[in-house]
Image 1 (cartoon, rainbow over the protein chains, first blue to last red):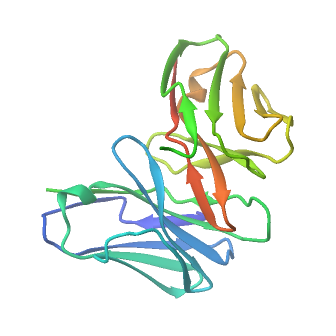
Image 2: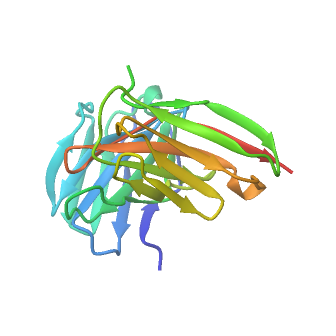
Length: 114
Length: 110
C-alpha cells in the first residue's frame, strides 16, 4: 500500500552511461514531481507534470528527460551521466486544489556516478 | 541568495532538552510548510501554517508563523531520539513549485 514508490533504491553507474528511474503513485493525484537532493541535503525541484503535461522545467540540462505515460507514473531518464549527477532523486505527487497542498514523497533513489 | 534561510544548519542536543529552529525570509508568503526527513526516506509534511501569528501544535512540536508572514519557527519540547532528522521549511512559488530551505539537521542524543 505504498503511496509513492521509486525504483531502483540505489543506482551505481559509470560516467557516460544512460539510466532511468521509475516512479509510481497510487494516491490518485494529478501532479507529479522530480526533485534532486545534493550532498548538502538541499532539495530542489527539477520537473513537474500535471495530467501528463510538463508544467515546470527548472533549467535542468537536457540530458534529463522526464516522461509521464499516465498520471500515475513519472519516469526520469538521464543520458550521458556525469559525476555531478550523483545525488538522491525524489519523486513526489500532490493533488493541486488551490492553496498550499501537501506533497507526498517517495523513498528516493541514490544515484552514484563513478 | 536563498529564498528561505534556516538556522541553525546543525543542532545536536541531549534527550529531554527543548530546542527551536528557524526559517527566515525577506519575502511575504501566503503559507509555509514544515517537512521532516528521516535518513533514507523522503520528506513528510508536518504542518502548513497560513495565517500571520498562527500557532499550531503537533504533540511536542509547536509551529509558529510570523505576524508578517515572512518567517516561522519550530519548537520541540522534551526532545526524544525519534525527533532526529532533517527539518525543512518550504513555500510555494505559484501553484505547484515548492521551494525548500536548506534544512536543519537535528540529532537528539540518548
